[in-house]
Image (cartoon, rainbow, N blue to C red; front, side, top):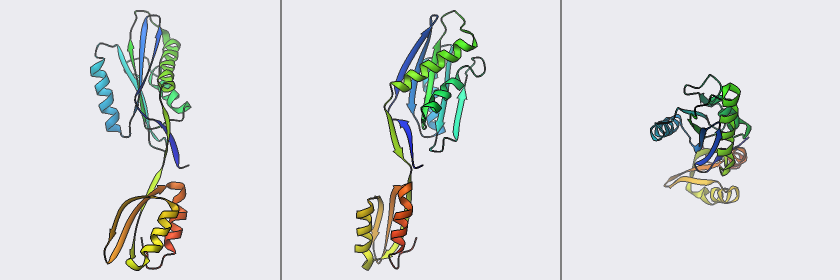
Length: 195
């Protein structure tokens, strides 16, 4: 697998149940620091809300995730939000759901449904995009082999990250993970080239 799904920009959703309002925000993020920054921002912006619950998933392998109930009964907020992220196979995403209490208790099943539906609406309103998992390769070769190297680069079409043409030439290329073995195998056939 060398691609994953995420969202392009922030999207919103909302859900109301027994006068409680649930405002959901799906936010593209890449690091835990970005998650913390966004959560702090929304907690400050919605300081008057009863709860600011969230869940996030990071990384192409879907291994870095967390769900936070922010004072709601355990498992009634963060887990259903995370469930929506998982069922839509998204990553590099943070979903924050802000709850304004309407005076009527919803019970655990009511909370689970409300947080799940609010998160689902934020995802439904998001532009979902597919990103590739890319790998970089750096290699060195002698100048006379430039044409051969450039022909491979042109045919395989990787992104050129850096290049240096001195007595010894070097190049760093970025290509989709699935295409890397073929690119590397072709480059290895160029004599004098080393990684």
